Amino acid sequence: MAKKKPIKDAAESGVTRRGFLGSVGAGAAAVAAGVSTRAEAIPEITDPEEMVQIALTVNGRLHRLLVEPRWTLLFVLRERLGITGTKAGCERGECGSCSVLIDDLPRYACLTLALEAEGTEITTIEGLLDGEELGDVQRAFAEHDAFQCGYCTPGQIVAAEGLLRANPAPTDHEIRHGMSGNLCRCGTYQHIVNAVTHAADGRRKGGGS
Amino acid sequence: MLPKFSYARPDTLRAALALLDERNARIHGGGTDLLGCLRDRVFAADTVVSLGAIAELRGVAATADGGLRLGAMTPIVEIADSGLVAERYGALADAARVVASPQLRNQGTIAGNLCQKPRCWYYRGDFHCLRKGGELCYAYDGENRFHCIFGGDMCYIVHPSDTAPALAALGAVCRVTGPSATRSVPVAALHVPPSVDPHRETVLETDEVITDIILPAPPAGLRSSYRKVRARASWDFALAGVALALVFDGDVVTSARVFLSGAAPIPWRAAGVEAAVTGRKLDPEIIAAAAGASVAGAEPLAGNNYKIELFKGLVAEQLEAMAQS
Image 1 (spheres, rainbow over the protein chains, first blue to last red):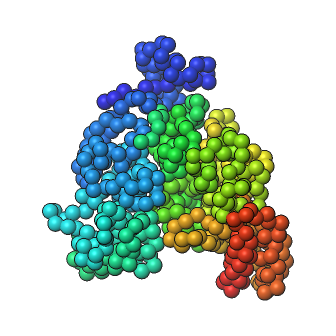
Image 2: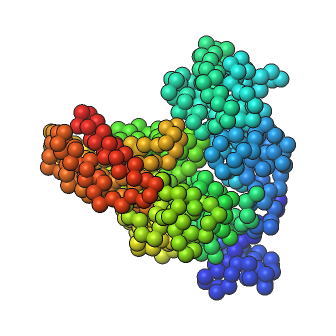
Image 3: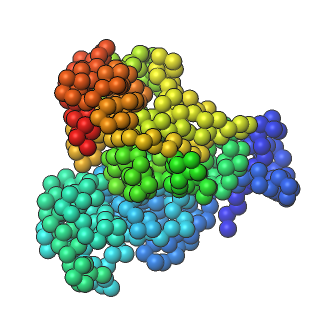
């Protein structure tokens, strides 16, 4: 377990946290942490250079790893866990190619710190397979030509999965609204709507996962 | 890769407030605007203080006096989907449903939506503009088709929030906690125009936290709505938007609160519209007068004169819809 350093109230002591720790060392910090009456007022903080151990549940598997505070979930999925189905596009929450499900809701992994995702259920495109076969939404995208270059497709499929989990019988308008956080530069939007409609129909008839 | 910062995720408000004492600490609500700003170097943060583990800051619940309490950390989606919100505060439901995209509504919070940074492309881009501590506003003589027609003064942004005008029209109040005191700030008084201070968007100090947003009990006869016009209907910021909260006695409007989005650096109170409809029936002449009043005194820039007709049409359309509802 990486250490999380307690801090002393900088305003009260008249020194900065870093200066305080640097001048008196970790021993004093441990003493501060041991003062039980003050324990609630002494929050933990992770320094920028510090790696902190977290546990992420991705597609049902628990991964323990060390992360920096600034690492996004997107970076961790792709560059630390090797789960590369989730794509890096704009990296500013505009294109949707990094969409993952967090506790069943589609979110942008590029705008989510890995530290913020601890304790949640993360689902990526890889988690939507049905065994070794394509999942129902993936199959629907293939059958309806709902992509050309395919770069946005994992994010589109994850967004569609999130939509169908929240709303199993979306109208055409609800599909367009629900998929509006994902851009397709090839412009296959109508085919995407067809695919999501088909996947929803299939699920209601009991053919889906 | 984001710049480096310290990070803390306290589980009590008291601990969060202690951490906000740190030099250049920034609050992480949903994180969507914070991470975007850090990545684009709009500002730096030495310490990021996440409020995500403070359970008491989240949720939508009726208050004892018939109003509604929105926890500051409530995701926008929960407000968009709330039956309580839809039933009593149509303008807020309308606004929450058109915020950003599904992914951002799932992550972004209601208080974060009120406190978001402007979307001016000079402010977000590689320009040391006035709002970022520089010498001048590049939009004034530059590309300004998405900028303000009211309230510009050295800086010509529009405030990007949809929920702020709706909450302001509905008379909502933020409860704010700082290191030594708790105070109430009406949403209508939360934002700071550039004429007062072009370097801040809200009256909040850096060590203050919005904990709740309280909606008063809806008066009998209240009808409210929010509508925004976008260049791209599926997902965009407002070119022009209007939040209406009118109280009717029969066909007659007895009181009105009207706020515009996409118009000014803050949610813009359209006092002229309020005056034009108060004490009146919403017949075509009154609606036409109110629509004209919505842009009286506007000072469009070189690229955004189109907003004049857009606001007039939008206000007329929304008043007509309300008269028929």
